[in-house]
Image (cartoon, rainbow, N blue to C red; front, side):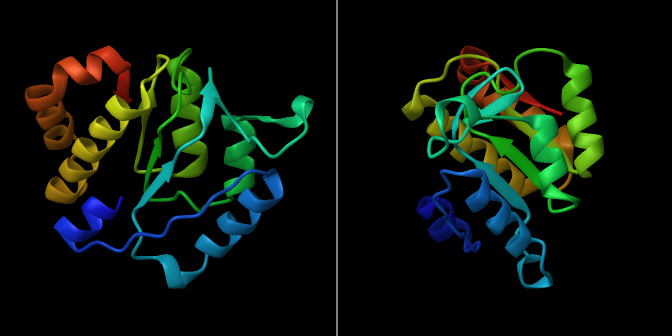
Length: 162
């Protein structure tokens, strides 16, 4: 994220989140007008089909589904890019992913459908965010650039944009 901050001059906030309580706290903070200029939510966790894992929770409570996250977010993702840099979070039914996008008002939803290598996914994430910053809200241009320049990497990682 520091690379993008330096190369694009964009503002970046980094927060470590390990529990539902911490996640709720930061989601509430980001709902305030003070953070309106932040258009990308970069969520980096361990994950599985339509879910992320909060490592600070008890074993039976670690899994947070996208539905639960949508309920917790309460408008925070509206008109923002929401990216899951986690294994398999976007694996499964596209219908459920579209529901998450619609329920949260996210401008775009993106992430991975496979078990990802952290270095390769970081490279893909930087490339994706670079395209977002270049093309703003023009999804066709963002998707086209990702396909043109990074297709092999994106396919290997099962990268999707909704």
